[in-house]
Image (cartoon, rainbow, N blue to C red):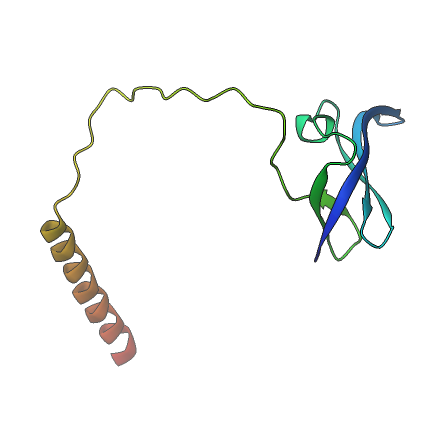
Length: 116
């Protein structure tokens, strides 16, 4: 897999024989033009502007995909939803004792497996 830096030349939605698709055309630093195809209405593709820098990955079969998913378009902030219960932190001493017990049990299991 190759990771390449590229600049967006166009982002649009097109009609194909398989229905509508979103396509992002980019040009790499070497001048290679690459088209990245996604489902219709893909906001990661259609939200890109001409001249914007992106990172793309080319797999072993030559298929290009968008790697860098940071849009310059501001996104609405996600609101935290209350879970309805409180989580108490586990005291460090209890956590250490649980880890030590787990390691001892695992050691006994490995010893049993190697002995048989």
